View: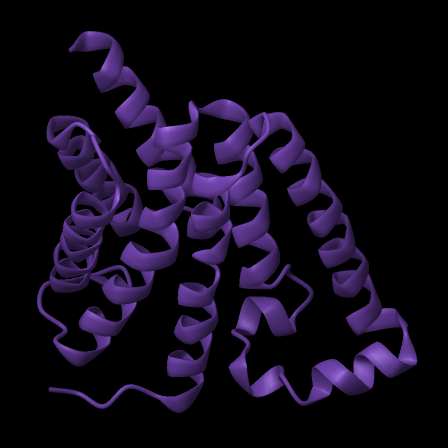
Length: 196
C-alpha cells in the first residue's frame, strides 16, 4: 500500500466536505431553481476569488499559503478544483430532477474522492494517470453509501450512475472531472429512468 501525500488528503477532505451541497438539497424546502440561484451566487464569489488570487494583493497573500495544495494547472492560471466543483454542482441542479441531481453530486464528492485515495494507495491498472482500482473502488463505494442513505432510489439507475461515473473519470479528457462526473452520471441516470 502506498502512502497518500498530505496535500492530497487535504484536497480530498475538502472534497468530502462539499457533500454539504447535495445534502442541503435533500432538505431544501423550495424549488430547486432557488437552490441553483444560490449556487450561482457562490460561483460568482468563487470566480472573484480566482481573479483575486492573481490580481488582488491581500488575496494573493492568502492563496500563497494554499499553493501547496494546488495542482500545476491551478498554479498556472487555471480554475481551482473548488470552483469547478461548484460549477459541476450548479449544472447538475439545473439539468436534472432533484433526486438524480443529488446522487450525481454525491458521485462527485464521495466517489471521486475515494477513487483518488484508493488509486493512490492501491494503484492497479494504471491508465493515463488514473487507475482502474481507484475508479471501480471509489464509485462502487459511493454507490453503496448512496443506496444506504438515499431513500427509494432505483438500484438499477444507481448502478448506471456508478458505471457512467467510472467511465468518465477514467477517460483522459481535457475537461475538469469536477464538471464531467456529475453531468455525465446524471445524464446516464436520466436516460435510464426514461427507458425503465
